[in-house]
Length: 279
Image 1 (cartoon, rainbow, N blue to C red):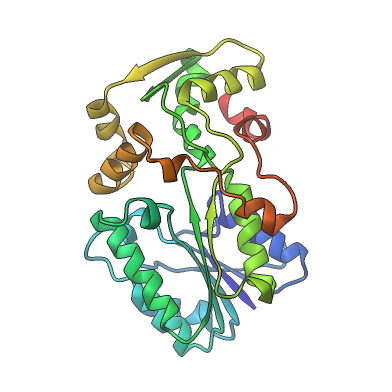
Image 2: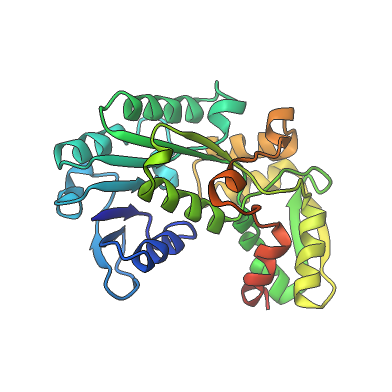
C-alpha cells in the first residue's frame, strides 16, 4: 500500500489517480474530507501532528511526502514524519523538496528542507528526492482577475524561469514510488522552456481565445498578497527567485524526460488543460 500526503492538491491528486490506475492500493491523506478516486482509502490527518499519521501508515510500504507551506516554516518538525514512517514499517519515501536547496542553499527555509533531506537519507529507508522549480499552477493565483477583468497582475513581468507542470511532478513521483531504478535519486524538475509572466499571460490569452492584459506589480504589493497564503519568509524566497533567477535556476533540467521518456509539458500545455479555471 502507498500513502500519498497532500493527496487533494495539484500534485497529490494526479499522483493518487496514477497509482490507483496502476493497480496499487492507495491511502490518500489530507487535512480535510475530500473526494478521492474509487477504491482509494481516504484518511484525514494533519502532518503538523505526525503521531496522527499512524492509522494512515499502518501496513504501508511507501510514502509520498509533500509538506504544506506551514511545515516549511522555521520551527516546524517534519522530520518526525519520517520517524513515524520508519516505525510503521514503511520501506520507501519519496520526498517533494525544492530546487532551492541546490540553487540557494543558505536561506533558512531551504536549510530546513536540506536538513529534512539529510534525515531521510540517513533513515535507512529507500528514498528518492524531487526538487522542482516554480510551478505552472501558480498561475491559478490569476484566475479570478482573468475571469473578471481579463487581467494578469504579477511582479517581474519580463523575468522568466522554466516552470514545471505539477502533472509532470506527479508522474515522476509515481515512477519513483513504483520503480526500483530511482532509489537514491535526487531529481531536478523543470519545464522545457523559460517563460516570463508576460509570456504566460499570452499563453493564457491563446488558450482562452480572448485578449488578456498584463499589469506589473511592485515586489512589496506581491509580497503582501503572497503572505496571505504562505509564511512571509517563503514569500521572500519565492520573490528572490522569480525576480532574479540564478543561472542554475534558469537551467532546463533533462530529468523529467529521462524518467518519463517524453518531454516535460510546456506552460501552454498546462494552460490548455486548465483553461476552464480562467473562463
